[in-house]
Length: 215
Length: 263
Length: 62
Image 1 (cartoon, each protein chain N blue to C red):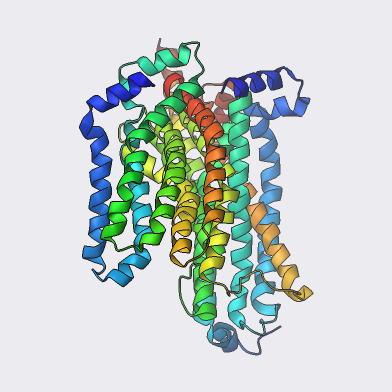
Image 2: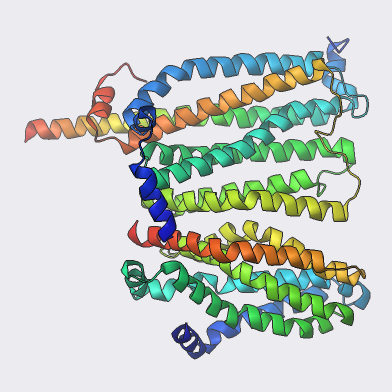
């Protein structure tokens, strides 16, 4: 895990890219829709959430690629260590380098989109709970396409439909807080998704990796 | 994963009934399905013809929706099929993964495009039905939205299947995707329902008909049964072709091919 | 019989376009589900047969 982080930190642009992408996508909306604060504030939860979702997917197909190419993935699979645990560590480090910075960057973007200040807390909280699930589900897709040449587009096709519940409740939480309602319900459901994905997704990812490598 | 493998091994040791192993034999499946095919095709044709004539000519129009109600006779069967075929695909995929059963792999692979075609039909008929009923071609109704996502899930499985060159690897990978999708399906349905009630409180849906008179639901039942029979016929025909391709080196396939009467 | 005349049947109380386009598309989907498997079966059988003939003639030469 520590090794993962150190390796990733060395490839600084790899983890800077999703952040820049996140910023860019969000900036496109005022240009495309309208710079009017009232309208932007209303659609800001959706914009930030969709952008965050796409940004987490951006680097996802590289999650297992380098390990696959240098053969270390194969060693992990034949090795005695439980794969699901190693995968969890890998996904966690991926999240620390994408999901967490995205969450931290979100208030700045919310400010630019004139989201009312009262909703910042819920926005960050929803991203904090929601993005780990995105990473965990994305890892299943990444494991399925790891051996394929043009896996990136395929990965998006496979994973995006599975992201829909998280998107609905994530942006739903922020919208609810915008309307002055409690968002605890939606946040609790996001938490439940995470609690489901945390044990199950690494199992599916491990199975997918075995297939991608052993055939 | 370790647990899953252990489970799979435990299951393997358990004695399954003999028909289960026989079903795993491509030859047995091929021969048995060959006997079923004419019956399935015949009953599908019969049910669909009666259902169609009844639905179009004899069923009364709905007092609110008028004659556009007749679209329900296509929409409901295809929506049923689209959902149950996905389930079938995931179950067949799981059987293929656990018991390494070739026939199950074939079934899972062949079911995907058929299911996608019915999901497409359900979507299109839903949209066309929406125009006279809601006044718009597309409304973000919960059922339509879930069906759209289901279609995307199908397309994902088909895309993954065709992207992987190795046949066995493709079957296993898409089985995993199908299983993950099946676990997600109820969650997606629940989320979309929740989201929909948030955005559109009042919308009446296709199946929300409290008491349908018999002359309306009997043809619907016939159409549903007919669609299922047709689906089974299509699935078996596709599977038989796939089995021949896979088993082309087997002796029984060579014998079959030498017999010029088989068309 | 629900309809009194053939033109009534085509007209469908003003909803003819919707009803008939749905049934038309359904017909296409059903046909696709019938014709494609049969065509595929035909081409696969033909190619497998040719392959078999080629292999047999090869064997007899050798």
